[in-house]
Length: 147
Image (cartoon, rainbow, N blue to C red; front, top):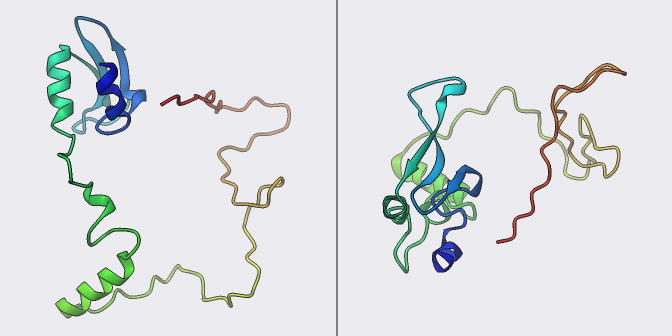
């Protein structure tokens, strides 16, 4: 298992979905897409041999790469590739989104709607609450990934 664990980090299943492991079974969380609500996430227990068999179905052979990092929709050439595909298929480019802001000169400083008071970067407001009230959302403790 120690040898295999070097190759398994976030390949087919994330570490947070693994619940428990012992000699008899490996428990992990999975999502049932047929349901909505809190019952959607379920726990499955599998014999270690069956878990490893299912896991290895998702491991690519040597020399293969994940599709999302290469090909037509790779980040590096995505816009150019889609434009070429549209030209080859004689498809008109999509209409401009009416909700997009108008073009602004590149030398104009960008003002964010809610900048971070410390660094000035983009800040996402998760919750606002009245003074003296307790927040409903609690931050998750920082986990240290040692892999």
